[in-house]
Image (cartoon, rainbow, N blue to C red; front, side):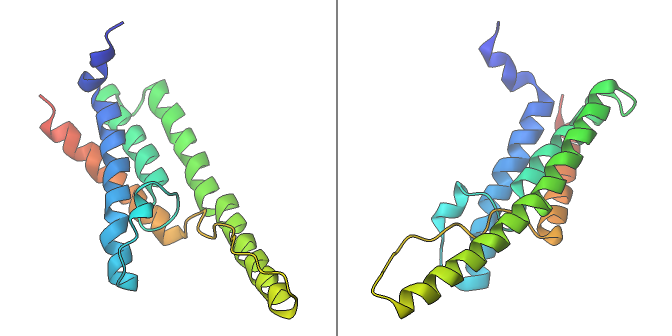
Length: 151
């Protein structure tokens, strides 16, 4: 088994490049929104653009480009991408909304009582449809670029 063979896998390179670029882009996008640098975004889920959407879209598109859009691997990658994007915009988004409500309830309770807790649940677990769309487009673009530049 050639461990360095992963560097010769254009599908994996496309996927990882799309994921990394999406994570990095979160920094300036958040800075322009809030005027503060949040370096933790490099390692956290949620935010603009969706790195989950970018990762699975780049994987599926690169498989289509390199292996064929009629291949079973492409069909599998598309179905996996659909599940991940649905989860990112649906279930995880709702979990984030619940965390926001719970945090507001805890704050209300704490303001009326002597209890003081500094711990808060993460509120940005999922993605808005726009965040998922931008991640999707980023994944398409990175896979297309890898295909165009691959020797």
